Structure formats: C-alpha cells, structure tokens
Length: 591
Image (cartoon, rainbow, N blue to C red; front, side, top):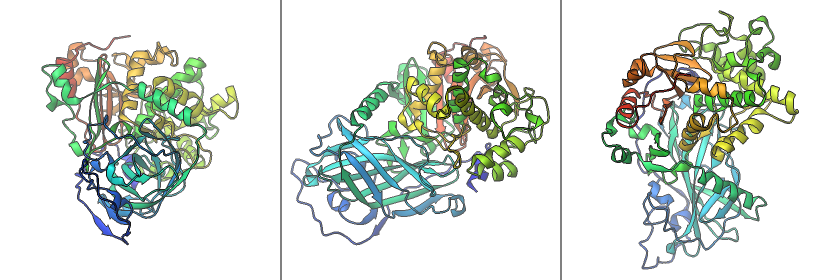
C-alpha cells in the first residue's frame, strides 16, 4: 500500500501529529539512586532510577540534553568522566503506537525493533558513530542508523556518564524515515544502563508511529582502530557546514521581509526543514517535533525521495561527462542489457536524465508514475532483475527520444545502472558509480556522512538513482549552492550541463504539468509567468529540485529557497515574490 501511495505524486494532504505521554509499567528494578547534589536540580525525565528500571515512557526532547539546559544551549555541558569507545547493541521490544495512517500502510513486521549494533567513539563531548551512512541494513521492516550525539556528566547519575544521540529508522524498499532519540548511562568498563528510545518525528506521508521505552543494552568496550580517522572526518564535516541563523533573523537582516510568506503552506509540525540561503548564511527553521525542539537538529536526516534524481542522477552524469566527455551520448541499450529491443535504439543517457526516452503509456502528468503497472512491477520488487525488466520493457515507444518529457522514476534508475556499467568498463569490475564517483564528489562538496548510504537492489547491490537517499537540510542546501556557485569552478562537473541548469532560458521539455518543464534531472519552474520575477521576462525559468511530499529547493541567482515536508503542501510563489522584492532582485542569466 505504501508504494501505491508513493507513486501518486500530486497528493496534497497534511497530518496533525498529536503528542501525549504514554506509560506502560514493566518489572521495576530496585536499583535506587543516591540523593542529587544540592547544587543541581534533580533530573525528572529519563533519570537514573528510570534508566535502571523497565518502564516504557515518553519524554520531552529536553530529556536528551544535559539537565537544566534548553535546546539552544550547547556550551556548558559538564565534561564526561567516562569514555565510550566500542560497540553499543540495543535490543528488546519497545511500545508501539500508530499516530496516523492505517496498519495496512505499514510494512510486515512493523512492531519489531530493528537490529542495532554500532561502534561509537567519544571526542570533545561528542558521541560519534563510526559508520553513519544511512542505507538499508538487514532484511526486516526497518533499518536503523545512528547520528552524532553528546556525552556529559550529571551529579545525580551516581558516578556514571550520560550519553544521547539521534537515530533514523528507514523503511525497507522505500524512502519513509522516522527520526528518534536515545539516551543511556555508562562507565568506561562497559557497565551500562538500559537505553531509552523514542521516535519524535518522521518524513512520511503515509504513516507515523511511536517506538518508545527502555531497551536492553550491551556495551562492549574496546579500542576503535579508525578512531582518529573518524574524528578528523567529523571535524572536516562540521567545518564545511553553511553558517546558520534562525529564520526569524531574516526579517532583521532584510527589513521589509514578511515572514508570513515563508513556509506559509506548511504547518509547523509538518515542516522537517526550511532554509533561505543568502549571502552565505542559511536562515533555518523546521526543528519542531511532537515532543519539543529537536536537540540535534543539524544531525536530523530526511528521506529526500526524488531529490535523489538530482543529487544522484544529475551529479553522476555531469561528473562522468566531465571525466569522460561524450558519456551522456552513450546509448542506454549498450550499457543496460535488459534494454535490448528496438525501442531503445536511439535513447541516450541524456534522454533518460531528461525523462525523454519516448517510451511511455500516457503523456498525462504522473499517470504512468501512479499506474498499477509501475507499482506492481517496479516500486514493490527489490531486485534489479525485476526492476530493470520493467524499466526497459514496461513502456511502449510513442515518439522519438528527446520529443517529450514523461515523468518516470524508472528512467533515472536506468541511467544509474548505465553509469555503473560504464565506469566498470573504464576502470575495472570493482568500481561503481555511487561509491567511486559520487561519494568523492559529495566529500568535495562538504556533505555529511549520512548521505553515503542509499537503498540498493537486493540481488546486485546497485544504488537506486531515482529515490532512496537520506540527507540533512544542510546537505540539500549545500548541493544546490555548489551547483550554482562552484559547479564550474570546482572542476568536478561538466560546465555545459551546469550552465544549462542555471540558465533562465525557456528550455527543457514540456511535462504536461502547469508551468513546469523538465531537463537534466531538474524541474524548471516558470517563475516569469507565476511570480513578480516577470520583471525578468515572462518566459524566465529557474531550476528546482522536487521530492515527494512537498520537498522543494529553488535555485535563484543569489538566494536558494528550500522546504522539506511530508505534508504535500507546495506553496512557494509568495516566498519567491518576497525574496525578489525585499532580498535580491537579480534575474537568472540567459546563456
């Protein structure tokens, strides 16, 4: 059912997530705490006694920060007296509660906590998972990965140190993601309390659910061989982040701005990330969860759905075209053996990137993408054997390639297969496009390690190119910024392709959607027809990333507007008008 809804990309709806505190008593430990020092107000939520008991309870997000600190404070953590270095394993069965959607929307085995066993290191008050790539691990309904958290001491923890970190739960064979928080007490010798886990938000139009409560934990303390490497990579990642201010500062820095025109179509509880990038500053919002402000918002990952078509699809083609000029003119059929019949005779990599293969059932916007055929034969299957067979043979030839753009995730998946085969032919059988072309590019751009993971086919382990990535808000904004400001000077991407993307020309192919063309893995929004940017010319276009649920990132010459949501809300025209009239009115170039 989830995949059925995934395909209907024009759904507009939102969910109001209600929070309440749930308690389910289990067998309570007799492990009692000593009285807290008089200089510290005793912790109420997730305290010592609770973490050494077996209760299931949900708390505010402040429970995952040092006691008496709010979510905006990060400078007065008390240094941890113990060191966490080794493997953390979490097991058990938390309480499950569905917030919205139906049981039929959930995957089989939805009540089972996913396998969690990760190595962590500790440095400068940070708890750092050694592996943070948000791919899918295991075979169950869910996979889970950990984010960077914190370690500190509190007087009332009886000689233990306290740790907390964010986690992401990802659905198997889909792009729905759940954000959660975990906290526990530990000592350097491997002694550990239970772990409190708690889902706090999600990026999923179809369902929302709670996992919460204490879980059994095992801490295997041992030296991590790659500790210094992990620290250096984390330091580099943090240094590469775009500087931020709260969105409220936008109206201070740019008098005349009306904040009511920003994120106006999205309820606060459905806003998973929001940014206005201008003058190198990221004015951000969207850290609300149903339990309070997310305490590790910069680490929060979001299932980005069809943003993947740009962040994987466009970038891999532009990178390979730079490295091997002529790549984009390679025929799909020469690199993807499943595409062997005559409908693919003249279809190139570039045609697939433009979704202009000429092969489709219906030219109506998203009709093919929402059809029973693509759901049953592409979105539900997990193997390349089945997915590629449909991508190659599921759509009849209607017009010559390059004539018309019909939105098909299958087209972008094919270019991903083609890119991997091409690079194997050039550089050896152990090389692949995602790990060996994209990850070095992501590193140069300065993206988080979270984006290093992606969904893959279960038989050939090939990365999906059309959806499946996870990213932070900073990752998404930074990709758009890099393409605009460094896409040519960075030396990693084909200059012609970058210029085509950034041009304000009326270009790309019609998509049978109002005021939208499609080209190079980007939507091209007709800003000249829709907004006050008509002053730039009525045919002016701007490149836009778009993802299921309402994800949008619009690249203007001096401003980038990004909103991440699962609400289905798409409002952006008022924002463009306000930006153009009060922040910067530069028009796109016409190359």
